Length: 240
Image (cartoon, rainbow, N blue to C red; front, side, top):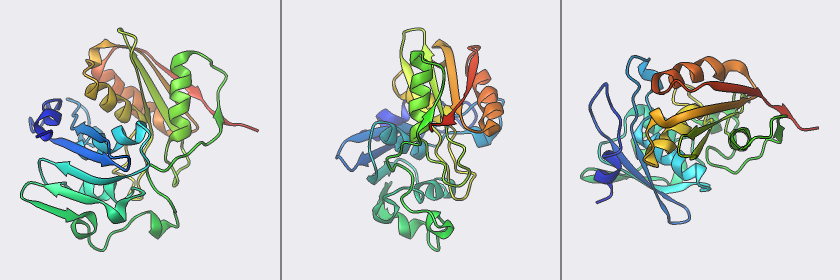
């Protein structure tokens, strides 16, 4: 019943294929997700519905999900992304006409345990980063950067977007053992803004707080596809 509502929020100008997803957090709360595509840019910038739903739950304080439902079978990219979760071993995936554990959908999987990483995506974190800026938008981006999950690169980052209505949407970087399914902080923030029903054209300010410049250019590129708003880049440092 909820999947069509989630799919209705999709923005797929390239594929015209709407995907809806709903995750159940460990608290029992449900979280929407949907796909986003950015016309004229690399397809690797696409946000998959499963990523959208998972990061929606994560940014709302969940530390894992135990069930994810989607209106089409997850692609291999999404199965790899889900394998990074703290709850990957217990995660159940509901698809049209069947429900199966993630472990069955991704046999002989490669993940964080193979690289000596404990925990996983959605675990609570505070990296102790600080910045000199003290405005509301920069603080929101810093909070996201401190939450971000980057055990392989340690390139912690967070983005905060403000719209003309005053809404602030923040996103944290979500890294993956296979690297490519990683989700940028801007993608997380844009996904949250979209799920809130805000138009990307309403963005009037954006801040990236990061420890490494690897996020700078991709953030500028994707942001330019949806808004003319400027991007402020703020270097974070570890607190003494």
